Amino acid sequence: MSCRLAGSRARGWSLDRVGRVTVRVEVVREVSGEVVEALARLLPQLSSSAVALDEPAVARLVGHEASTVLVARGAGGGIVGTLTLVMFPIPSGLRARVEDVVVDASARGQGVGAALTAEAVRLAREAGARTVDLTSRPSREAANRLYERLGFARRESVVYRYALDADGRP
Image 1: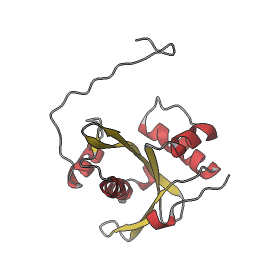
Image 2: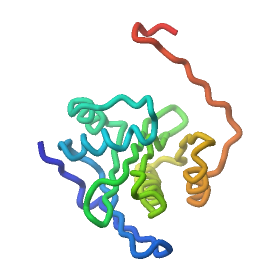
Image 3: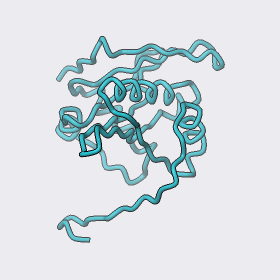
Image 4: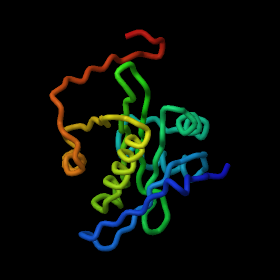
């Protein structure tokens, strides 16, 4: 399969404090071996329990109407980061959530996370969302500083999770 990326959605971004680093953020429209390989390489850097996604699983993710998968390409053209923007309507309006932000260890501190997040916020605003939510573990100190620098505010909230086993029972 080929990978077609939305040319009109590609954004360049540079960060002068680390030299002239250029990051291009693109919306994935179709799946390729490159995208599958990048997710297989990046997701374990986010979570040790992340399950490897095969091509059909990536295709379901990319093709789902609520999900927008972004990838960041570094100066060499390779994929160095990813983010999934999830948007869905609820009675109080369009909700937007940033999920599974991961930047390759070799590209951290070069503006990749900022470029991905800024593009997700732009897309959410363009779609009509009033807010963009995300969660981040306290141990991800650099990521938390980044989100605050980008204008995200900590909320006083409690996050609950209900775990389901393979049979759908708690």
